[in-house]
Image 1 (cartoon, rainbow, N blue to C red):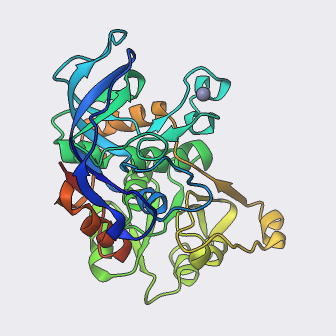
Image 2: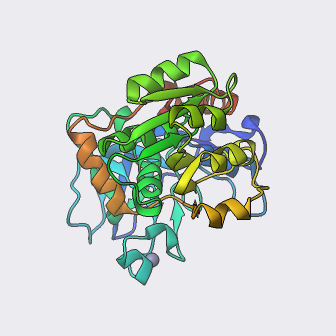
Length: 342
Ligand SMILES: [Zn+2]
């Protein structure tokens, strides 16, 4: 099959469009002909490499996959040939206490498509039956691939970690990112008041179209000052961050008493300071969040089927142009998900 692989870590140039062996399925697995695969920042971390990524090479990236089932293993009962499916990106054992509790990403064996197993930058991918879900409603393959990772992540951050309640006020950092565009919509499901930030006027317009009640241009305005003004000095109940160091102080200063700052990533660095006085005095919480569970994806998909949550697609590239697609993502000139089309 054709696939995008890298044989060494590095910049986008290490991505090669080449022949790769077609995956061989086990009895509990299915083979999926990939119709669309969405990019995530994770792909760039994995490609760049580092101490946390001791991967077998060559490697196939891609965690967000939709496609058609073309082969099923002998123990597979729930999935049939020809099914239009999307894959839950996180793979866990399904047999430990954390898996039983629906906290898949806390499983000791947790990994993702495109990390320690081959991903969707290819014509075919194999998946455990457990990870295969029907595409809801009349979603296109592109829309289906754009949903899983960021909606699981944002759902887990807002509900499971930060305990968002109806009518609370939420600050979403980076509305143009996949997680940001998902978080705005999920917070609106429970009628939260959403304040979203972005670094360009065209992105702020799109954030409003997704449901943001207020927007802050973080290239022109101070986030903390604007939040103070918009909340009449109260601050917000929840801050959703995935950027880290560059906005950390602004996020923490934007919290109300009893506010919760939840973060799922540190794209600008992870060296953070914490004002302990404000932490205990204002009874604030700082929460880490990483991916989520299949149950959370299943819940989010119900709203996707009803059209109440929507995949936000920036652009679609042919598989062979994966390097250009990743360059676009690293350049930040996008809103929503960038996809590949085998
Ligand atoms: Zn487990």
